[in-house]
Length: 387
Image: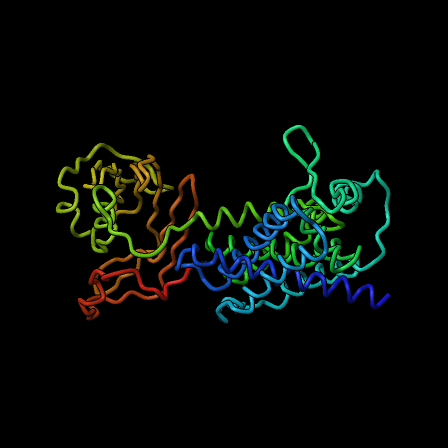
């Protein structure tokens, strides 16, 4: 029993390291701005796909243990020769959500080492586990018709064949431990990219791991989670919006407008075409409405409190950086006197894309700042990293 389990584990370690090694071939094509954790995740998932592709191509000539071993050895050699920092985890671990993820993976490991049971009526057995008995003929891969738009085997099932060759019959099922782990790692990467904290991203992974519908396609030889990881990693790799960007045209004008922190006392300069259009209610406050146009192409409606004269709200409509017209409602609240000037310490922004609340803790006027901070960099800093 233990020898069978150790063989399955060893086979999976061999294939996983080989997949990472082939992934190092792809690492050079990833954006320099990627964090080490993002690079590790995308490298390994991409390497899994590349390993399956190479095994499939080689398998058209020979899919014996020897030829499979040569392909795997090539990947392992690449992994050993890779840069050490590619192996670094590079992300803070939060105990509670990490423990939930670890518990799910541990249960998956125990289930993967158990003796496979089932019949041809169970998809995980017939379609992915017993598969090589169908598409492997005389040591050569012979694809067969599958569903209408596909053929069989796919890249993942070819990797399953390699796992069986070196890890025995339980190795393909045990592989769910690390394939599910990397699917959850992609969830963390996307969570960070969408603005979650590391704690929030870990909780996203923990909640994902406990979703029954997702887990159903992640163990017992199913490949759904693997393909989902391919898709999500592809989405993250294609999202390279980071680093140095020189703004031009309307986008540049809009950025200049947003950088004017004292616009309340410079409105005539910033929006010379302001025109009073009437009165309106903002909550329970009576206001005067003023129409104005920004240099970047946006149209604003300012709401000035009829009693205090303070601008307490703004309706904005205009093109974003992609040219799409977007609307936003901005509310300025919790005014406090700072050096004799009333400053809003809470700013609420409501838009179809997101709702934000900005809360200020401290405001200081006329703090000395070196001009060099605003100098245009000569090139994108190599050390910049995003998730």
